[in-house]
Image (cartoon, rainbow, N blue to C red; front, top):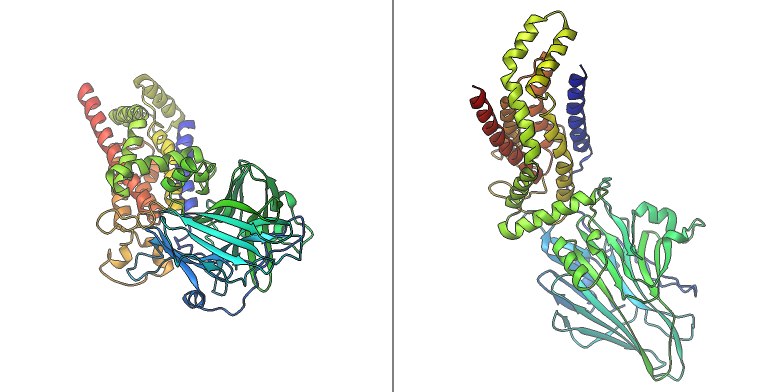
Length: 575
């Protein structure tokens, strides 16, 4: 009876976990950027950096067209720098669209103040000496070029009436990294005490998925401490007008560098200060009619003597959290733990290797569907000894079915005696009735690690397989309710549970076929439960990413082949 109870428990846990995740899995919306702020940095001198809130909302393109700009375009991004204020407030991802529709727009990651959801980067200077005129959000800069490229840096210049020259020099690489150099040339008759600062601002609270396995919001790695806070945390702990400002979270001094910014599901903006520079990190929320979120840092106080200059450097990442690109920056620019910008979760010791393995296979196969298949084969090879022992035991169980039936007929009214004799039979023949459940239980961590990778990493975002599978990170698009694509209509949410796609049906069939190779349970209740499992899994997995269902289907096929081969050998050997 204990074995039977354990069997029910194993099956129940497996189904409960999958159903639990199925219920909580959200739809796969595009996390379109939106947001910014108004005030952020205020050093020990109590000087605020403020960007005036603009309440007249205009279309993004209109706002951009109303100002003079320096444009940039690479294979990865395109956008512009606003000469009014010197903000980087216009950036579009050239390789990623909002949907698979041909007319879909590319992802607009940064947007200027005055648009619906501003999101931009500001760099500048602050000083405790109010006699010094500093550039602000209304300053109109002069540029030495109208176009920024990986081979052509751009320098913005502005001079105040005291004959102090301010410069901002921007460079960009072929992917998502900007280098920004702030320079002051003091041609005045006085010495200047000044703080450089850099800040990322988001106005309005961004739309987030709100799923507990995914972090969206503030992210930073300062002094090798990874900090992840959602927008509610920033609101509750870092609102300047509140008395409960948590200094340990909202303010931090560091000299070891790191990075900080805002992360969405697939995209991120992050400031990267120079190493060994003393900085004060600040995270803030305020509200001037709209919620304003900001994160940034202030450099140490510098004394710029007359007839001297100051150069302050740092970098900025704005783009897609693609693993190979983050790894490249980690290694070549010595940005610590930059790949942790991807939300690997609590089980990163599993999710990271899974992601690296699939990306490695993709480098050879050129298709993420094929990479998932190759990964599945790798997992089968690693688990081969366990599966081999399990299938051998199951084959023995199938061979013992006539003896099990005989015991059932011998002790029809004495269930305890039948169980005792059955256990003795198992022990004598070296069979284990639970052997078939063990490989499934071992597969569950791999299954959910792959699910996590498919959910949070951008590599399979809109990545096609073959045929009708155009996005491995989304469910099978051809469902039963549309006659597998023949009828074009929007399936109502109430019917979506039975809108099962072709790939999940195939997965259910392979599970049913594999079940036929297993010995039928002697207990009728067990037999009915096992008979229902393929149908339950088909309905449950129908809403999972197609890449995950592909993994499960291929795993079933390989299990069938291995189990069939073992059964043929054992039955032939004993036959």
